[in-house]
Length: 116
Image 1 (cartoon, rainbow, N blue to C red):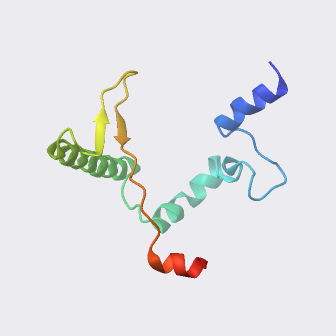
Image 2: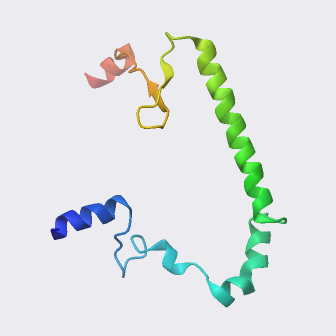
């Protein structure tokens, strides 16, 4: 496998980082682990507003996300087959959201005056 091919695969998985860079370095390298994490855990969880167990918090988020997806699916289904937004049946096991292209909008008169 060539260097370029390998780099392309890693970049697709976001596994290529520039070590001396603040912006492009691996964000996981700065995460606390082990004793350092256990020492700071309570303060961090309080700081982000997680008083209870993380599982309870995640279950609430999952329920909210599921309710939002179901409401969206109901609204799209109610719009009918001619709606510009629709769900496409899965070919590979994953439902896809399809959105029709918007029609072009002409330039407003004010913009044409400014360009002159």
